[in-house]
Length: 357
Image 1 (cartoon, helix red, strand yellow):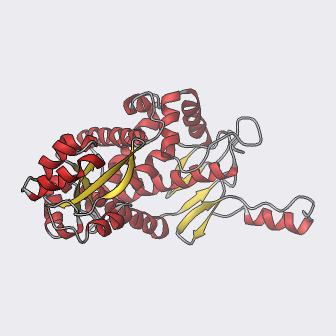
Image 2 (cartoon, helix red, strand yellow; image 1 turned 30 degrees about the horizontal axis):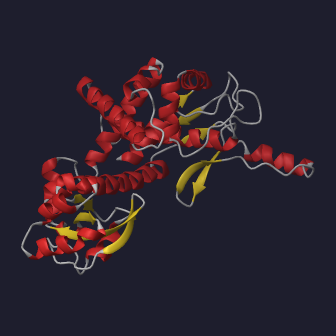
């Protein structure tokens, strides 16, 4: 889901008048064209509103720093924007023509809320969160731009919901998924213990005290307030393989017999780790993350299919060249000849090549 949302929201990004005149043909997908005038209006909004610019930059994987000329950005940034605009327009068209999806007022209201949540999530996960809210970012968009983004979000949600390879992110569907993948999820509790208290810790464990009781009594880690519960890890977690390896030989609901020596707050400490009984309530956040990742992968695959089989695309040469990359159809940065080696034949070849559709 996140990838589709990102590609639709990122359609906001633009090449600030990158080689685009008022007569530019802009970008056309299946007969729908984004004109140069519309592009300039969107870009002006982004560059003159700090909150909107912040959220746009958070979702961008390409730097939109100024280019070589005034009021311009690099060719790479221009191409990145063109790609995202093409993708957003293609999904909108596919949803309307193939899925027969025409969002009503309720759908658009839901999509607006979803879009704000996605933007907020991106900000919260950043090392430099935006100072304004996602709602403020949407409010700073010109009306036409905001309407397009909300409608595109609605189309994205509908597309994901109708894919056979996605799992609805409802509690019922998540529980059903979890019931057949329970062994894939590992929940962990920890106790960070002062070396002088290790003997007492181990004695209390042998006496039958629970993991929660031991953590609350001995652990200096903040997780002690939750009985040592540190979190649950699913297959998509970057820590999954390490956690699985570290807890593989530890009995369920028991701390490891031999602690690991670590440095905690500048002091030597003993780390006890336990794999705890996994329930859906404990693993819910990890399940949600995994399903969001799986759904995003499925959506990306469908997006590439839409671009390849269902889209007729024309891109103004100022933005780049539309072609087929190893990952699917995309807009490429224009390839220019090296300085000092431009002859008549090269110029003629470039002129022909630039007339692509």
